[in-house]
Length: 241
Image 1 (tube, rainbow, N blue to C red):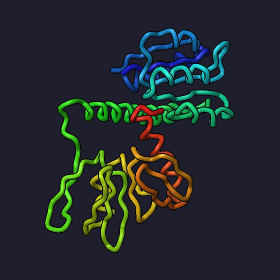
Image 2 (cartoon, one colour):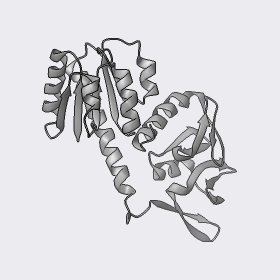
Image 3 (cartoon, helix red, strand yellow):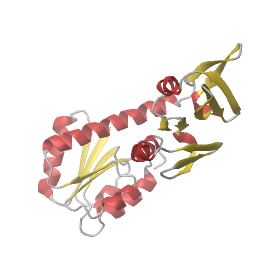
């Protein structure tokens, strides 16, 4: 795992570098004074701590270029101003640290970034040839049916049954949506008590509904902030941001 710090202030650059060395001694640490120096490297970091307000090329411009080169970059902005926080979302920032901050706060954010990196590694490994695709087995009528998780678009509750919508059609069985939710894992989300959706098939969404490739699910308003956060995390893990 390569971690980089890019900040034009030597004192901050050295401090963050020392914290990273202490918290992640196994990481390959690189320090950069400018965005140009960072972009000149052949191999981009896995986790980047990036200042925004720097001379010549600022951090936001560097981040846009880096995001095009490395979709799964875990980007943490480190800045003295909150004014760019909304722009940070546009480049898929993992976190936005405003100076000054404590070592404890820094450690919390870095640990979460490490966990995100491990999740991405596991996802890549799960897609390697020869790996068994995850699946569930449901009983519908007298038959037991094997369904791969990658083919499930969404599920909904209908007349005390779970109606499962897949890329090939739909089927129903007696069961609880809460039990299915536990089986399917973090690539799925329950935006409403009657629906469970697969992030993979989301086309568009708002605070009241989610449009999927093969249907529409309702969104409970109190679930909307959590959905946005989880969906962004899913896209970062999948290399879509």
